[in-house]
Image (tube, rainbow, N blue to C red; front, top):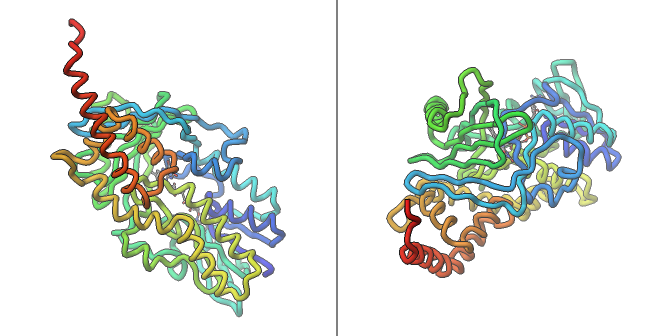
Length: 392
Ligand SMILES: Cc1cc2nc3c(=O)[nH]c(=O)nc-3n(C[C@H](O)[C@H](O)[C@H](O)COP(=O)(O)OP(=O)(O)OC[C@H]3O[C@@H](n4cnc5c(N)ncnc54)[C@H](O)[C@@H]3O)c2cc1C
């Protein structure tokens, strides 16, 4: 293999470029914007930086957050301490750092939009906004709005959700997560360097109504958003059926990150999966194992083994997490109450936040701990009845 073209230089494309260029391949990255402030919370979990320590060991500005406040209608709120902090970057900074690493590894980076790709012998001919280029192989990393129809996941409207928000002036030391009535999604308030990123995502609801919900929340919270910069984008959120037929590789190409639909359908976390899929694609491409078709198969299998089976299972859980009912209340309401009252349940939620608790295996852990959690909850309720309130 002589030349690999990487279409898109976000986290997925930049990391694939770094890995392939480090291995000695001739790598050419095309991105129409290069480093930019992509609409995103910018949050990276423990799962991401423990596997890729360079994400934490660098001088790029970032925030370390050790507390999340979870709130649900009728459930009040609870503070969740994060033993494994969440890292929050501005996407401009994160993208720039990743592109610089790719460049240092030897990748050539070009600011251009890929307009069209067509097979040319065993390779590809690319028409870009700056001319024509050839490549032997393509890594498709064009994100959720991939406009190249012949490659990457075919995202139907049911496989995406709108995600939008504001960058507002202000600061706080914790994250807020607010569940809302009848919404398969949530509102977040993320403190970033110099401002707050507040946003909302929700499946099956138009962006205009999500925006209204968010603005109502901001007004109620007294967060001044008028005049603040607005952002909106798409989040892949594949249905269980779409995971089964997900098009992640074909003849002469592999798709990584959002262009392959690789986002957690419950939390919307995509940065880890962008980097991880880029890593797996690079390994498959560099493997000695035989024919190109074999490499595509290897990539598909390693994705499935590594995390795609878990995300597929997550897609079956998502509706129940946000819209389900448990013990005569909504699941978010019970989640907040149990987190407040049961240390065991709180530890499970903390592990979910850190990415240490896969969805496969969650049910078993919940069942193992449910007795204990119910015991914790009833003890705390009984205890609070025994102890008299402070005199007002
Ligand atoms: C509002 C919002 C909040 C989010 N918050 C979080 C969060 O806190 N944590 C988290 O883990 N995930 C979050 N995500 C998901 C995360 O942003 C994505 O999963 C991640 O950016 C995927 O990286 P990527 O490299 O695959 O795609 P992208 O980051 O979208 O990068 C794609 C790149 O391709 C370029 N491109 C596209 N088409 C072309 C073309 N034809 N030619 C040349 N270049 C092209 C674009 O310019 C872009 O730079 C959020 C998403 C949204 C929408």
